[in-house]
Amino acid sequence: QSTCVIIGASHAGAHLAACLRQQKWAGRIIVIGDDDRLPYHRPPLSKALLAGKQSIDQLLIRPESFYQKQNIEFMLNRKVARINRTDKTLQLADGETLAYDKLALCTGARVRRLDICGAELKGVHYLRHYRDVENIKTNLDGQRNIVIVGGGYIGLETAASLRQLGHKVTVIEAAYRVLQRVTAPEVSTFFQRVHQEQGIQLVLDKQVAEFVAAKDDPTRSDRVLCTDGSLYPADLIIVGIGVRPNVELAEQAGLKTANGIWVNEFAQTEDPDIVAAGDCTNHPNALLNTRLRLESVPNAMEQAKSAAASICEQPIQYAAHPWFWSDQCDIKLQIAGFNNGYDEVVLRGDPGVGRSFVAWYLKQNKLIAADCINRPKEFMITKQLLAKQITPEKHLLSDESVDPKRFLE
Ligand code: FAD
Image (cartoon, rainbow, N blue to C red; front, top):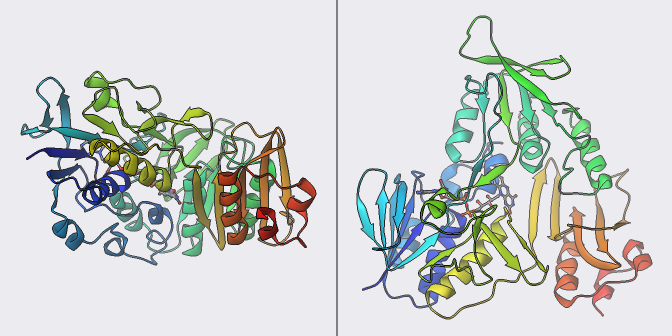
């Protein structure tokens, strides 16, 4: 009986295991994860879990009974330390050796740490695993001064959730606008207004220099010092400045890596018995005509499907348009496509008032993406427009009186 071992028990790993069974893999499936839980949804960590609206038990990607029925085995709380491709074995950190016939790397990403003075002090948190949220929550009694470093999706979602709980929240962002890496200035300005309206203090264009130790307890930080000398009191600091792909296992095994584990459109590495999927991969996307590394659940799921198909020797090309979402305050932002290299933004609705509009991104007069703010209809339609390579006329895109369904006619 052949054995497929999946390293990483999260979105990509869980879906890959399920897809293997769907695609009639009859051998053993073993999923190894260094977390102590069955795979759970990560997006709610900064949203419903942090805001106390859901518990971790409600966030399982699939119930335990599903894996039992599908005969999918888990080794949780275990870490793979080495891959030996010559004899097709894995070495676990506790010394155990495990043989594989097929191997899937779903090792994901880990938080990028701020390497500044005070980085190791108590009170400085990151947010990637459910335990991070639990640690943060044990420090939330009473009204707290919370400083969030980073005005990206995770920083802003975290700010919104903590503000909802009544805390005083300050976001410090090094760029001159939030979400600078991922959205148009109009969208950043909109989110800045929304967060300020909620009572969140935004500090832009400022770099954090040090987490300063408390006078009464030098093991804990209680202030954030910026490079311009300004100080922000902080009972709690949460850093959200991006992630790095977990490529070390692949590297050590001699597989190619470059901002991710290098795979082809079928999620295959250069080793015919090893695939990779999710946040850890650098993959080509024929629709976008480029290679990229994405950090999103839809990418992890789609790529896992291709990876499972490759293991079952019925390759399916991974060529989906990216999509993503972010929930902040009462805003549901849904993003269709990939706006990299856009040269024009067409707005539908006014980002300056209210809480609903669309920013369509065009590149050389071709629609490539949309940020849909509380606009589920436009989001669904943009996905179809991208799939069919349709670019509606710009005056129609911006005209609120035109039903977006007409764009597909
Ligand atoms: P990961 O989820 O990173 O999982 C990889 C797993 O492998 C980890 O558990 C890791 O510890 C484990 N692992 C690594 N190396 C080893 C080893 N050697 N041995 C054993 N185990 C190992 N995406 C969206 O699309 N929408 C959102 O709104 C959204 N919000 C988010 C909010 C937060 C707070 C976070 C943290 C992420 C969010 N994301 C969101 C991103 C999304 O969660 C990731 O894209 C997704 O989790 C990627 O899944 P993955 O399986 O590739 O990797």
